[in-house]
Image: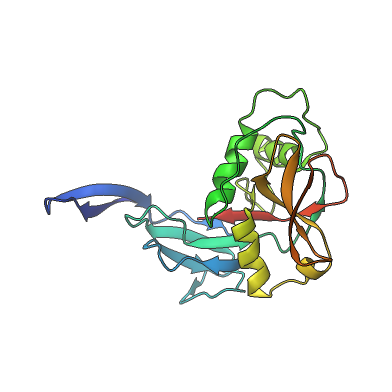
Length: 214
């Protein structure tokens, strides 16, 4: 059933701000690593048997969800990482194109990745890149772990996963972010020195983790 969500404008008038289908659930696809307390979105989670989970925390892996109230903040509340597939070893891609994806905040990984996937000049685009892989899974409609809206996290989002202490990746691997440094370089996590650094987008020795948010 479609339900309309209302808020109030500056004059105190009740206005519709969104709607949702309270009978439709979607797969979560991974593990929760960050919960944005500034978002007023309300989400109901279910386990694999379809039973409601009363509350979730960082580190939980619910099976399904639906957004019962999108709120008026417009912010995604739950950030998920693909803990099943793990880290994928691929180059960044688009070696000589400035995409302008240099925003580094919680929430910018999704917009960064969308901007990269919208690039039409593919003269320096490799079919082995992480963004080609994401685009292919989305176009195929199958996705990864039942979801086709994965993105490459920003530095801030990767830091949120790193600070959650859910994985040891950050002490074992060089990891791509979706934040660009220049036409030929992008930011990555340098595990040896435990800091952020830049490297050529064509580097094949780095890995990436897939994120999604809702």
